[in-house]
Length: 506
Image (cartoon, rainbow, N blue to C red; front, side):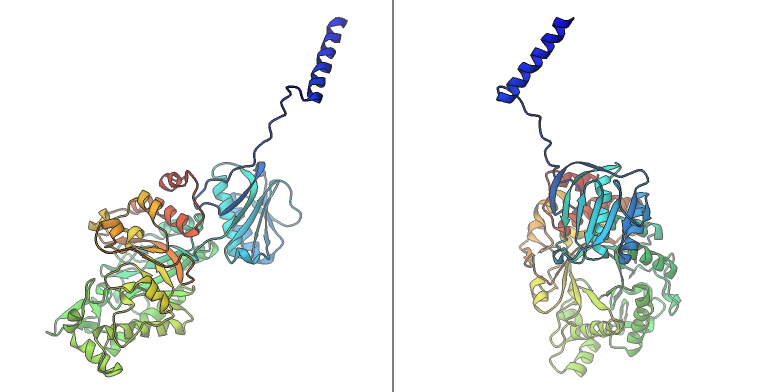
């Protein structure tokens, strides 16, 4: 037995000699730094650490900054944790203020070690850091250690829902707010009225409401939720066209053609009574939407393909414009004058008007209020994005390809997801006739990627046939496209599996 012990010690000494001399010894493998985690949208900057952070049992969300307590409370609730004060311990999440100017209003820096520390200049950045943590966790309790630094490229990352043609329940809209927030998107635009319906309660004009409709209480609850989740809710009453539902009980306000026939969907912009009606509607709803913007629509007043000859069928429009602006004015100037009238109403409430691009120009004597934001969607009657930016307008990319998701006869005209992922960016504007998508002679229009007038982009859900899809079908259908818009507008370079995550989720 003693000889066996001696032989074992001898072997150990021999092995030690080999190690000391470096003869054939293999050093223990060192763990590689964690690679950038794969989520949508992709994190902009990442420096991998080693190992994982584990969300502690009984973990907490802490902040010493009173201005971040609401964010701590929201994050704790969504993680199933509690808020606390005092010193942190392993497994905790800490929110704090950062002085780094480069983070801007929505950026954050997240250090993942024994704790998770999220630093941001403001509440929005702290919130988005928390959303990233939730995405990293998924259904797990661990995340890779490292340092994330994340700043969005574009300030608007949104979704427009046509609730005028098709009623959506408050629960469905609230679910979209949470979905947007999880993708670090920040705008929900509600197209509340159209020819098929006026879908919001009115105290001043209850006769124009189409049932079912959102109540003001529904909207207040939605806006309150959206505010907590850093999503701006923008209301839209489309006018002076697309008003058949609202004008059904007010034929006296409808535009008449040269033969005296009434146009059921068009407001007579030359009528003082019609303008008073429009003002009453807008002023009633502005308090419900406390953000920076109100959307006035302004599109397709005399149809999608109106020309000067189209306007000639309504001589009162040209007469109104020439009486106000001189002999060079034309019928379209009357429509632009009305849109500027609404811009003044909106400005009086401290808001900025937004319009669709085909309603932003085309006159000879009147220019659209330069403060208005223009949502560019088509190329036949709209000024180019560059011309709009040069005129002083902020421009949102709502180009048909690939941001339109139409339910109804045009549902086949949806961009291929792979093609959009490979070839589209928010600074590339493609209308319905773009050659990249249809083979026509039209061309893609662009703004410089860093143009300060380029606001961002939004997915646009139109319900041309309200019965074509259910709420559930629409939510399922738009989910990958929302992920695409989120990825492109946040702007970080994709990873190898980013498209698969956009397509399939997870």
